Amino acid sequence: MNCISFSKHALEARARRTAKSQGFRAMKSRRINPLENHGEFMIIDGNGIPQLGFKYDATAQDVIRFCAE
Image 1 (cartoon, rainbow, N blue to C red):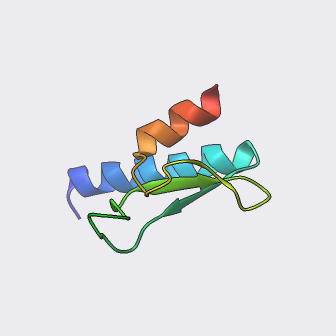
Image 2 (image 1 turned 30 degrees about the vertical axis):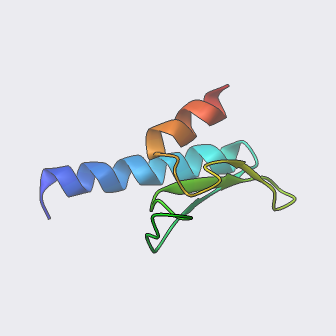
Image 3 (image 1 turned 45 degrees about the vertical axis):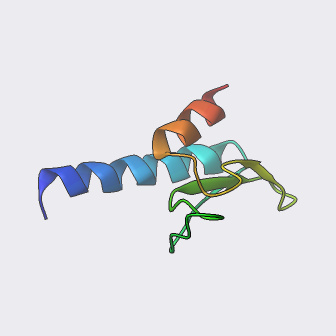
């Protein structure tokens, strides 16, 4: 594993931990569909309602920033 992919993996893990600590769930898309799914993150609240990345278009950094607000 090279440093770039490890760094990306670490950033995604941090985004998930940050969201969880704020009562959210950060879900990463497993598929890419250009119309509905951009292959990144969606943040869902405790009621299952999306709060950010409605088309799985939030990056890990977006998730971290959203949770810091």
